Structure formats: structure tokens, C-alpha cells
Image (cartoon, rainbow, N blue to C red; front, side, top):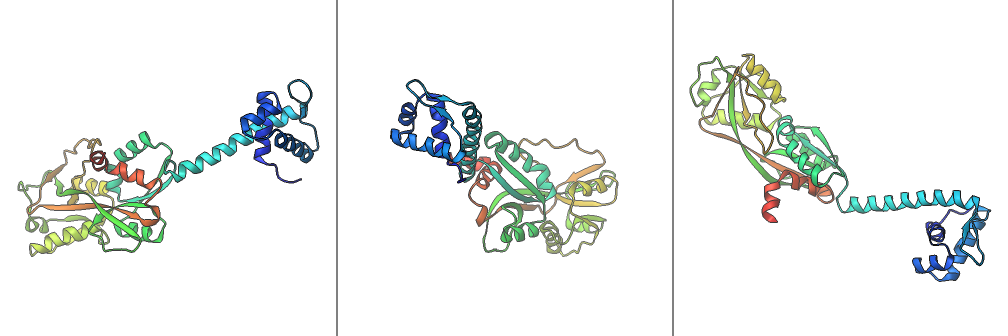
Length: 301
């Protein structure tokens, strides 16, 4: 048997709903003979009579009633499939793969994901914990759509980077240390340090800060998880230089009394940017970008 035509199914359902071939023909903008031919072809393919046609309204046979019920489901599924594709093409649904550090995931993404869910609930965001280097490599390879990365980043073909925000880097140190109000590279270089590992932009940024002052830092331990670093600071294991992470409507957790926070002298800043793959710049990715930059898009509106 040849495959069924959705047009034939729509004609059959229209006849069942409107009571006659003539009414169905008018509703579907078809010639009456076309409707007759479609039903005849459908019955021939199925090998059974679906409608009783006479002087009165068209009536479904027992076989026709069961088939019409299934035809309605098939048509609804087809309509849903078409609508889903349209929504994906319009960027209203789909999956966006986002790379970010643990600190960014904890502080910057939650308010953005909340805004996204309010306006575009059909978009699924897959978040991956990655360093900036890893994120850039995956964007270039096409296995990531969007990433929050530390700047500057070297130019990379197929990846577009724009500034997002600037964050102050501050010192976290055990509260029982006797420390000045502002901490210098010279003072910190003489203390045990806990730093992000050497593959991260934050490590290079802080190492350059020490180097510019003519001192060399030797970290006691290197980690990539900022919450773990703060835990070690609270335990008195050492001091750490970390971004002052406070974003939008995300409330900071209660301050740990075992940790003191001091500004740096000279001041140190970390610049974050949004890196987007040229392949993923359209579709649902653009709505994730808008959620990450609400001030920019609000002023544009």
C-alpha cells in the first residue's frame, strides 16, 4: 500500500466535522470532484469503506470512526512537528551549550537563566564547567555555542568575543591574620597563597600583578574551584586572590566570619567577555545572550 497523504486525512476529518463532501470542499478551498477522488483513493488504499454517502449528511462507518480518531492524532502530531521546527528556526526552542567557570556558573548564570525561563521557557541551556581556554577551543570546534571567558583572548577563527563586565579582584585571607587595610603584592608574596591553576587567565592575571611589583608568587596549592579555595582560606591554609563575585539579583551567601576580605593596592580587575561561535550565533543562542546582558538590550529597546 502506498503511504497515506496528510491532505487526504485532512479531507476525511473535514467531512466528518462538517457533515458533507461539499462543505469540506468549501472549507479546504478544493473542487468538489477533488474531495471525492481523495476519499475514493483513501478507501482504496485502506481496502475498506470509511464513509456512507447518500442524500443526507455523510456518516462514518464503524471502520471510519476508528480511522478518523487516529487521523486526528496523526494530523495533530504533524502540526506539532511543523510548529516545533518553526519555533526552533525562530530561536524560541532548542538547546544552547554554554561553557563557564564555576564562579560564573554560581553567580552570573542563575539570574540570566531565570530571565530566560520567564521569556523563552522552550530553550534548554546545557552548562559545562570549563576554563576559558577550553571554552574557546570547543567554540572553534563547534561543540559549544556560547561561553563566558576571561579577557583578553587571542583572535580565533569562527569565534566572536565581546566584553561583558569588569570585576574587582580582592584578597580573601584568614580572619586571624594581622593585615593592613589594603594588601600589596609585597605583603601577600610573603604569605602562603592558594591560586587558580596555571592554565587559567586568573592565574596569569595575578602572576602579572605580582611581577609588575617586582615580586614572585609561589602558590602553596592550585585549584580551579573557587568555593573550595574559600574553604581552605577559612581553615587558615592561606590567602587567595579571587573576583568579588556579586551579580544582579543573586544574593551573596552569609559571610564566613573566618574569612577577611581586603582590597588590593594597586587595584586589580578581571574583565569577562562573551564568546560566541559563528555557527551558534543565531537561533536560541541570541536569547541566551540577551538574558546575560539585560542592561544592554533594555537600553537598546
